[in-house]
Length: 143
Image 1 (cartoon, rainbow, N blue to C red):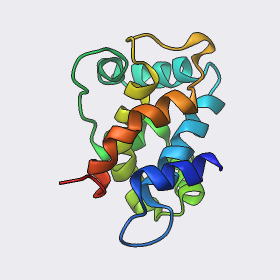
Image 2 (cartoon, rainbow, N blue to C red):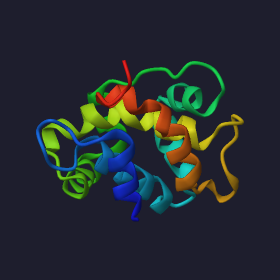
Image 3 (cartoon, helix red, strand yellow):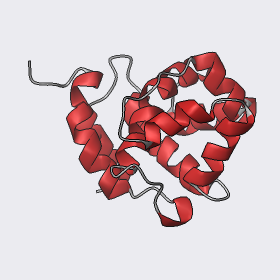
């Protein structure tokens, strides 16, 4: 089973159809791991845009600070946003809003001890295991 299939089974598909958040989580994992330095590279991008404290909260064991969609778009840049939207099968105008919801959880799940993994690469197994508890965020929780 592919990473995307696993994510789909964990969090379900969006009501609009298409890949939605599961595909976006997969695209986010791939994106972070493809950065020079992996998560460390992404952390540096946030720091350069004055948002180091935000991504630092996602890595730490405390509460995750939220990020506005426009601030995330500013950090990532238009070409990255367009690429992520294409990989996730969602409209580019929606991708940063969706990513602002899922990226903090992806980073937090990848850093359970509050430390960036060696070489900055996110372990999809670790992330998927931790994200299993996030199903309720995507409307698949057991009420």
